[in-house]
Image 1 (cartoon, rainbow, N blue to C red):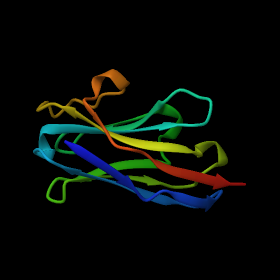
Image 2 (tube, rainbow, N blue to C red):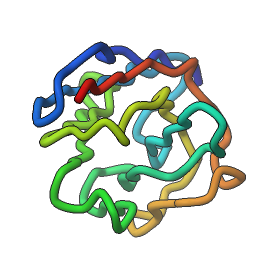
Image 3 (cartoon, rainbow, N blue to C red):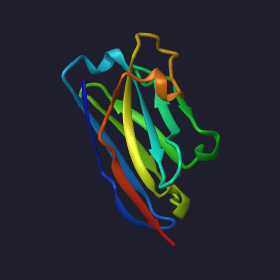
Length: 126
Protein backbone atom coordinates (compact mmCIF):
# COMPACT_ATOMS: atom_id res chain seq x y z
CA UNK A 1 0.00 0.00 0.00
CA UNK A 2 1.21 3.53 -0.79
CA UNK A 3 0.66 6.28 1.76
CA UNK A 4 0.65 10.01 1.10
CA UNK A 5 0.56 12.35 4.09
CA UNK A 6 -0.48 15.97 3.76
CA UNK A 7 -1.80 18.89 5.76
CA UNK A 8 1.32 19.99 7.57
CA UNK A 9 2.42 23.58 7.79
CA UNK A 10 3.34 26.49 10.01
CA UNK A 11 0.94 27.39 12.82
CA UNK A 12 1.11 29.52 15.92
CA UNK A 13 1.04 27.98 19.37
CA UNK A 14 -2.53 27.31 20.41
CA UNK A 15 -3.62 26.73 16.84
CA UNK A 16 -4.72 23.58 15.11
CA UNK A 17 -4.02 21.48 12.06
CA UNK A 18 -5.57 18.42 10.51
CA UNK A 19 -3.27 15.97 8.81
CA UNK A 20 -4.49 13.54 6.20
CA UNK A 21 -2.99 10.33 4.92
CA UNK A 22 -4.37 8.91 1.73
CA UNK A 23 -3.78 5.24 0.96
CA UNK A 24 -3.76 3.48 -2.35
CA UNK A 25 -2.84 0.15 -3.82
CA UNK A 26 -4.49 -2.33 -1.47
CA UNK A 27 -7.63 -2.63 0.64
CA UNK A 28 -7.38 0.17 3.16
CA UNK A 29 -9.69 -1.57 5.62
CA UNK A 30 -7.17 -4.41 5.92
CA UNK A 31 -4.86 -2.14 7.90
CA UNK A 32 -4.61 -0.58 11.28
CA UNK A 33 -3.29 2.94 10.79
CA UNK A 34 -0.93 4.97 12.89
CA UNK A 35 0.70 8.35 13.14
CA UNK A 36 4.24 8.90 14.36
CA UNK A 37 6.42 11.98 14.56
CA UNK A 38 10.10 12.75 14.56
CA UNK A 39 11.59 15.98 15.81
CA UNK A 40 15.12 17.05 14.81
CA UNK A 41 17.72 15.04 16.67
CA UNK A 42 15.13 12.76 18.24
CA UNK A 43 13.82 9.29 17.59
CA UNK A 44 10.56 8.69 15.84
CA UNK A 45 7.78 8.38 18.38
CA UNK A 46 4.25 7.06 18.47
CA UNK A 47 1.43 9.56 18.30
CA UNK A 48 -1.82 7.68 17.69
CA UNK A 49 -3.29 4.57 16.09
CA UNK A 50 -6.69 3.38 14.93
CA UNK A 51 -7.89 -0.15 14.32
CA UNK A 52 -8.94 -1.17 10.82
CA UNK A 53 -12.52 -0.09 11.43
CA UNK A 54 -11.70 2.95 13.56
CA UNK A 55 -13.63 1.64 16.54
CA UNK A 56 -10.54 1.40 18.69
CA UNK A 57 -7.91 4.06 19.06
CA UNK A 58 -4.72 4.48 21.02
CA UNK A 59 -2.74 7.59 21.89
CA UNK A 60 0.56 8.56 23.38
CA UNK A 61 -0.24 9.49 26.95
CA UNK A 62 1.18 12.99 26.59
CA UNK A 63 -1.09 13.76 23.62
CA UNK A 64 -4.43 12.50 24.90
CA UNK A 65 -7.06 15.19 24.82
CA UNK A 66 -5.30 17.31 22.18
CA UNK A 67 -4.92 14.91 19.25
CA UNK A 68 -7.61 12.78 17.65
CA UNK A 69 -7.15 10.06 15.06
CA UNK A 70 -9.98 9.06 12.77
CA UNK A 71 -10.41 7.27 9.49
CA UNK A 72 -12.78 7.12 6.58
CA UNK A 73 -12.47 3.74 4.91
CA UNK A 74 -14.72 4.84 2.07
CA UNK A 75 -12.14 7.52 1.24
CA UNK A 76 -9.07 5.40 2.08
CA UNK A 77 -7.91 8.15 4.37
CA UNK A 78 -6.81 8.48 7.97
CA UNK A 79 -6.75 11.83 9.75
CA UNK A 80 -4.99 13.36 12.71
CA UNK A 81 -6.70 16.37 14.24
CA UNK A 82 -4.22 18.33 16.32
CA UNK A 83 -5.53 21.03 18.64
CA UNK A 84 -3.89 23.41 21.10
CA UNK A 85 -0.58 22.95 19.35
CA UNK A 86 2.64 23.63 21.21
CA UNK A 87 6.14 24.38 19.93
CA UNK A 88 7.21 20.95 21.16
CA UNK A 89 4.79 19.40 18.66
CA UNK A 90 7.10 20.58 15.88
CA UNK A 91 8.18 17.51 13.93
CA UNK A 92 7.80 15.59 10.73
CA UNK A 93 4.63 13.54 11.02
CA UNK A 94 4.42 10.13 9.38
CA UNK A 95 1.50 7.86 8.75
CA UNK A 96 1.91 4.12 8.69
CA UNK A 97 -0.11 0.99 7.98
CA UNK A 98 -0.08 -2.34 9.80
CA UNK A 99 -1.91 -5.23 8.19
CA UNK A 100 -4.46 -6.65 10.59
CA UNK A 101 -8.09 -7.75 10.69
CA UNK A 102 -8.19 -7.48 14.47
CA UNK A 103 -10.53 -4.66 15.46
CA UNK A 104 -8.70 -4.27 18.76
CA UNK A 105 -5.26 -3.88 17.19
CA UNK A 106 -3.83 -0.39 17.57
CA UNK A 107 -0.06 -0.85 17.42
CA UNK A 108 2.37 1.57 19.04
CA UNK A 109 5.74 0.18 18.00
CA UNK A 110 7.49 1.17 14.78
CA UNK A 111 8.32 -2.41 13.89
CA UNK A 112 4.66 -3.39 13.96
CA UNK A 113 4.00 -1.33 10.86
CA UNK A 114 4.44 -2.61 7.33
CA UNK A 115 4.21 0.56 5.26
CA UNK A 116 5.16 4.19 5.79
CA UNK A 117 4.30 7.48 4.15
CA UNK A 118 6.83 10.16 3.31
CA UNK A 119 6.03 12.53 6.17
CA UNK A 120 4.64 16.03 6.42
CA UNK A 121 6.31 18.87 8.33
CA UNK A 122 4.48 20.53 11.19
CA UNK A 123 6.04 23.64 12.68
CA UNK A 124 4.52 25.38 15.67
CA UNK A 125 5.82 28.85 16.44
CA UNK A 126 5.77 30.35 19.92
